[in-house]
Length: 238
Image 1 (cartoon, one colour):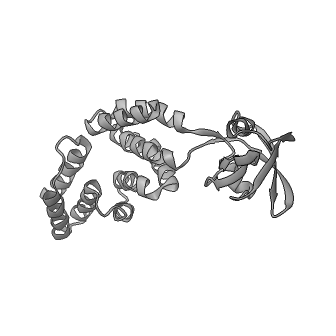
Image 2: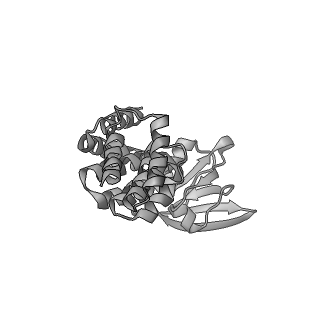
Image 3: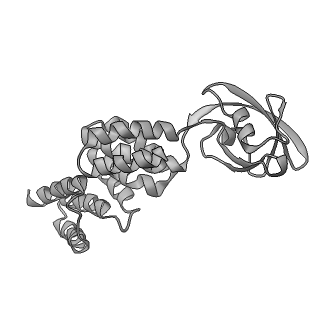
C-alpha cells in the first residue's frame, strides 16, 4: 500500500539524517492511517455484525461496548443483513458527529449514542514513534513528546525508544532509563542508558554498556544512532 511504501521511505530518510523530510512525509502517513469512527473491529458473517475488538481510548470503549456484542442498528437503520463494508459506512463519518448504536448482549438490547472521533490503532504506533524521533532531531520536543506518548499508549514496545529519547532530551534521566530498559536488544536504547550513566558520573557502568554496543556492532549508515553515540562518547570524555 502507499502508506507502507511511504513509511519505509520515511524510515530511510530518518536513518540517513534527513529528519525534516522524514517528519513531513510521516505527517501524511499518520493521517492516512488514522480512523474516524467509533473504534471497533467487527465481522458481519451471515449478516450479523459482531464486535470482535474494542480499541483502547475509543468512543466505544468509553461507552462500555464489548467484544461479542451484536450490533443491530445505527441511527435506527437496520444493520442486520448488511456486508461489512456497508456496516462500516454506517458507523464511520465526520469527526465529532454522533451515531446512535443499538446492540444486543446476553439477549438484552441496549442503545448508546457515541461521538465519532479520529483516532489511532496499534498499527499507527511505529509511525507515531518514528515521527517523535524525527521531531526530536529537529528540535520540536513538544510534538515529539505528544507522538511518543501516543505511540507508547498504543504499543509500549513500539513507543519505548521514542519515550526514552524524549526523556533524555528533557534531561529526565530516570525516565530515560525506565523506557530504555524495556528494549533489551536495542542498540540505541543501550546508548541512551550508557549516556545517562556517563552524565551521572558512573563511567564504569557506562563503559560496560558501551562495550556491549561495540561488541554487537553499530550501523554506520544509521545517522541518528551515530549522533547519539557521539553524545555518549563526549559525556565519557568530559
